[in-house]
Image (cartoon, rainbow, N blue to C red):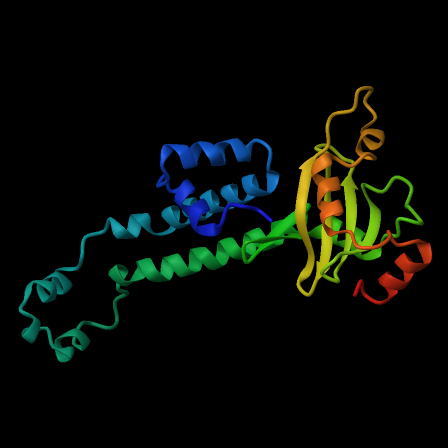
Length: 240
Protein backbone atom coordinates (compact mmCIF):
# COMPACT_ATOMS: atom_id res chain seq x y z
CA UNK A 1 0.00 0.00 0.00
CA UNK A 2 1.07 3.59 -0.50
CA UNK A 3 3.15 4.74 2.52
CA UNK A 4 1.90 8.34 2.30
CA UNK A 5 -1.31 8.78 4.28
CA UNK A 6 -3.98 11.32 3.35
CA UNK A 7 -3.04 13.79 6.10
CA UNK A 8 0.61 13.89 4.99
CA UNK A 9 -0.40 14.16 1.34
CA UNK A 10 -2.70 17.12 2.02
CA UNK A 11 0.03 18.85 4.03
CA UNK A 12 2.40 18.31 1.11
CA UNK A 13 -0.03 19.84 -1.40
CA UNK A 14 -0.60 22.79 0.95
CA UNK A 15 3.17 23.34 1.36
CA UNK A 16 3.07 22.64 5.10
CA UNK A 17 5.73 19.92 5.30
CA UNK A 18 9.32 20.56 6.26
CA UNK A 19 12.10 20.38 3.65
CA UNK A 20 13.05 16.78 4.45
CA UNK A 21 9.51 15.42 4.19
CA UNK A 22 8.86 17.42 1.03
CA UNK A 23 12.02 16.08 -0.60
CA UNK A 24 11.02 12.51 0.30
CA UNK A 25 7.63 12.87 -1.40
CA UNK A 26 9.20 14.64 -4.39
CA UNK A 27 11.45 11.61 -4.87
CA UNK A 28 8.54 9.17 -4.58
CA UNK A 29 6.52 11.07 -7.19
CA UNK A 30 9.14 10.31 -9.82
CA UNK A 31 8.59 6.55 -9.49
CA UNK A 32 5.07 6.15 -8.07
CA UNK A 33 2.26 6.90 -10.56
CA UNK A 34 -0.43 6.22 -7.95
CA UNK A 35 1.02 8.81 -5.59
CA UNK A 36 1.32 11.27 -8.48
CA UNK A 37 -2.36 10.71 -9.30
CA UNK A 38 -3.34 11.40 -5.68
CA UNK A 39 -1.36 14.65 -5.67
CA UNK A 40 -2.92 15.71 -8.97
CA UNK A 41 -6.43 15.10 -7.62
CA UNK A 42 -5.74 17.04 -4.42
CA UNK A 43 -4.46 20.00 -6.44
CA UNK A 44 -7.43 19.83 -8.81
CA UNK A 45 -9.83 19.86 -5.86
CA UNK A 46 -8.21 22.94 -4.35
CA UNK A 47 -8.21 24.76 -7.69
CA UNK A 48 -11.90 24.01 -8.22
CA UNK A 49 -12.85 25.24 -4.75
CA UNK A 50 -10.83 28.44 -5.10
CA UNK A 51 -12.45 29.20 -8.44
CA UNK A 52 -15.92 28.56 -7.04
CA UNK A 53 -16.03 30.63 -3.87
CA UNK A 54 -12.97 32.88 -3.60
CA UNK A 55 -14.78 35.70 -5.47
CA UNK A 56 -17.70 35.41 -3.02
CA UNK A 57 -15.41 35.70 -0.01
CA UNK A 58 -14.04 38.96 -1.39
CA UNK A 59 -17.47 40.59 -1.37
CA UNK A 60 -18.21 43.07 1.46
CA UNK A 61 -20.51 41.96 4.25
CA UNK A 62 -23.97 43.55 3.86
CA UNK A 63 -24.39 46.66 6.00
CA UNK A 64 -27.25 45.27 8.10
CA UNK A 65 -25.24 42.13 8.92
CA UNK A 66 -22.17 44.21 9.74
CA UNK A 67 -24.26 46.29 12.14
CA UNK A 68 -25.42 43.15 13.91
CA UNK A 69 -21.87 41.92 14.27
CA UNK A 70 -20.77 45.23 15.77
CA UNK A 71 -23.69 45.50 18.21
CA UNK A 72 -23.53 44.06 21.75
CA UNK A 73 -24.36 40.38 21.91
CA UNK A 74 -27.52 41.07 23.94
CA UNK A 75 -28.92 43.23 21.16
CA UNK A 76 -28.28 40.68 18.41
CA UNK A 77 -31.48 38.83 19.12
CA UNK A 78 -33.10 36.13 17.03
CA UNK A 79 -35.88 38.57 16.10
CA UNK A 80 -33.43 41.04 14.58
CA UNK A 81 -31.86 38.29 12.50
CA UNK A 82 -35.14 36.86 11.19
CA UNK A 83 -36.34 40.39 10.40
CA UNK A 84 -33.79 40.68 7.58
CA UNK A 85 -35.47 40.85 4.15
CA UNK A 86 -36.09 37.36 2.86
CA UNK A 87 -36.80 38.13 -0.76
CA UNK A 88 -33.23 39.06 -1.69
CA UNK A 89 -30.57 36.34 -2.01
CA UNK A 90 -27.95 36.50 0.73
CA UNK A 91 -24.66 36.56 -1.18
CA UNK A 92 -22.82 36.45 2.14
CA UNK A 93 -24.41 33.03 2.79
CA UNK A 94 -23.09 31.50 -0.43
CA UNK A 95 -19.50 30.37 0.35
CA UNK A 96 -20.56 27.19 2.15
CA UNK A 97 -23.09 26.38 -0.57
CA UNK A 98 -20.53 27.06 -3.28
CA UNK A 99 -18.03 24.81 -1.54
CA UNK A 100 -20.52 21.95 -1.27
CA UNK A 101 -21.56 22.32 -4.92
CA UNK A 102 -17.93 22.43 -6.07
CA UNK A 103 -17.02 19.32 -4.13
CA UNK A 104 -20.02 17.43 -5.50
CA UNK A 105 -19.34 18.52 -9.09
CA UNK A 106 -15.66 17.67 -8.85
CA UNK A 107 -16.40 14.29 -7.31
CA UNK A 108 -18.75 13.44 -10.18
CA UNK A 109 -16.16 14.60 -12.72
CA UNK A 110 -13.38 12.53 -11.17
CA UNK A 111 -15.65 9.49 -10.87
CA UNK A 112 -16.70 9.70 -14.51
CA UNK A 113 -13.18 10.21 -15.82
CA UNK A 114 -11.80 7.40 -13.65
CA UNK A 115 -13.65 4.83 -15.75
CA UNK A 116 -11.13 5.48 -18.50
CA UNK A 117 -8.09 5.24 -16.23
CA UNK A 118 -6.09 2.21 -15.22
CA UNK A 119 -6.82 2.78 -11.53
CA UNK A 120 -9.11 4.91 -9.36
CA UNK A 121 -9.06 6.04 -5.75
CA UNK A 122 -11.67 5.16 -3.15
CA UNK A 123 -11.31 6.11 0.52
CA UNK A 124 -7.60 6.65 0.01
CA UNK A 125 -7.02 3.20 -1.51
CA UNK A 126 -6.35 2.24 -5.12
CA UNK A 127 -8.68 0.02 -7.15
CA UNK A 128 -8.75 -1.13 -10.75
CA UNK A 129 -10.90 1.04 -12.97
CA UNK A 130 -12.43 0.82 -16.41
CA UNK A 131 -10.68 -1.53 -18.81
CA UNK A 132 -8.42 -2.99 -16.14
CA UNK A 133 -11.34 -3.96 -13.93
CA UNK A 134 -13.08 -5.62 -16.87
CA UNK A 135 -9.93 -7.50 -17.86
CA UNK A 136 -9.43 -8.78 -14.33
CA UNK A 137 -13.07 -9.85 -14.13
CA UNK A 138 -13.27 -11.59 -17.50
CA UNK A 139 -9.90 -12.62 -18.87
CA UNK A 140 -8.34 -16.03 -18.39
CA UNK A 141 -4.57 -16.25 -18.47
CA UNK A 142 -5.00 -19.77 -19.81
CA UNK A 143 -6.99 -18.40 -22.79
CA UNK A 144 -5.37 -15.07 -23.71
CA UNK A 145 -7.13 -12.70 -26.10
CA UNK A 146 -4.91 -11.84 -29.10
CA UNK A 147 -4.12 -8.14 -29.27
CA UNK A 148 -5.81 -7.32 -25.96
CA UNK A 149 -4.54 -3.95 -24.58
CA UNK A 150 -4.41 -5.45 -21.08
CA UNK A 151 -3.43 -9.04 -20.36
CA UNK A 152 -3.64 -11.00 -17.13
CA UNK A 153 -0.82 -13.28 -16.06
CA UNK A 154 -0.59 -15.24 -12.83
CA UNK A 155 -3.68 -16.04 -10.78
CA UNK A 156 -3.31 -17.34 -7.23
CA UNK A 157 -4.86 -17.27 -3.78
CA UNK A 158 -2.98 -15.03 -1.37
CA UNK A 159 -2.17 -15.87 2.22
CA UNK A 160 -5.11 -13.71 3.40
CA UNK A 161 -7.53 -15.76 1.28
CA UNK A 162 -8.11 -13.24 -1.51
CA UNK A 163 -7.50 -14.12 -5.13
CA UNK A 164 -4.78 -12.03 -6.77
CA UNK A 165 -3.88 -11.58 -10.44
CA UNK A 166 -0.92 -9.94 -12.14
CA UNK A 167 -1.55 -7.75 -15.17
CA UNK A 168 0.23 -5.79 -17.88
CA UNK A 169 -1.09 -2.85 -19.89
CA UNK A 170 0.78 -2.87 -23.19
CA UNK A 171 -0.15 0.54 -24.59
CA UNK A 172 2.24 3.36 -23.79
CA UNK A 173 2.89 4.26 -21.10
CA UNK A 174 3.09 0.54 -20.33
CA UNK A 175 2.29 -0.51 -16.77
CA UNK A 176 2.45 -3.77 -14.84
CA UNK A 177 0.96 -4.53 -11.47
CA UNK A 178 -0.87 -6.81 -9.10
CA UNK A 179 -4.56 -6.72 -8.17
CA UNK A 180 -6.32 -8.65 -5.39
CA UNK A 181 -10.08 -9.16 -5.27
CA UNK A 182 -11.95 -7.47 -2.41
CA UNK A 183 -15.57 -6.61 -1.64
CA UNK A 184 -15.17 -3.14 -3.17
CA UNK A 185 -13.49 -4.41 -6.36
CA UNK A 186 -9.95 -5.24 -7.46
CA UNK A 187 -7.59 -3.55 -5.03
CA UNK A 188 -4.24 -2.66 -6.61
CA UNK A 189 -1.37 -2.74 -4.10
CA UNK A 190 1.28 -2.12 -6.74
CA UNK A 191 1.43 -0.78 -10.29
CA UNK A 192 4.71 0.35 -11.84
CA UNK A 193 6.02 1.47 -15.23
CA UNK A 194 7.38 -1.15 -17.61
CA UNK A 195 10.79 -0.27 -19.01
CA UNK A 196 11.04 0.77 -22.66
CA UNK A 197 11.91 -2.19 -24.91
CA UNK A 198 15.29 -2.33 -26.58
CA UNK A 199 13.88 -2.99 -30.06
CA UNK A 200 10.47 -1.32 -29.90
CA UNK A 201 8.43 -4.38 -28.92
CA UNK A 202 6.45 -3.13 -25.94
CA UNK A 203 4.42 -6.32 -25.57
CA UNK A 204 7.54 -8.51 -25.41
CA UNK A 205 9.24 -6.20 -22.90
CA UNK A 206 6.15 -6.11 -20.69
CA UNK A 207 5.89 -9.90 -20.55
CA UNK A 208 8.55 -9.95 -17.83
CA UNK A 209 7.14 -8.56 -14.61
CA UNK A 210 9.12 -5.74 -12.97
CA UNK A 211 10.86 -6.60 -9.67
CA UNK A 212 8.36 -4.60 -7.60
CA UNK A 213 5.45 -6.64 -8.96
CA UNK A 214 7.29 -9.93 -8.54
CA UNK A 215 8.12 -9.01 -4.93
CA UNK A 216 4.46 -8.22 -4.25
CA UNK A 217 3.51 -11.63 -5.65
CA UNK A 218 6.16 -13.44 -3.60
CA UNK A 219 4.96 -11.68 -0.43
CA UNK A 220 1.38 -12.90 -0.96
CA UNK A 221 1.66 -16.21 -2.78
CA UNK A 222 0.52 -19.22 -0.80
CA UNK A 223 0.68 -22.62 -2.46
CA UNK A 224 0.64 -22.94 -6.24
CA UNK A 225 -0.44 -20.66 -9.05
CA UNK A 226 -3.89 -21.58 -10.43
CA UNK A 227 -3.98 -23.92 -13.40
CA UNK A 228 -6.51 -23.47 -16.23
CA UNK A 229 -9.35 -25.34 -14.51
CA UNK A 230 -8.81 -23.60 -11.16
CA UNK A 231 -8.71 -20.20 -12.85
CA UNK A 232 -11.94 -20.83 -14.75
CA UNK A 233 -13.67 -22.11 -11.61
CA UNK A 234 -12.55 -19.02 -9.71
CA UNK A 235 -13.96 -16.74 -12.42
CA UNK A 236 -17.27 -18.60 -12.40
CA UNK A 237 -17.40 -18.12 -8.62
CA UNK A 238 -16.84 -14.36 -8.89
CA UNK A 239 -13.18 -14.58 -7.83
CA UNK A 240 -14.09 -15.52 -4.27
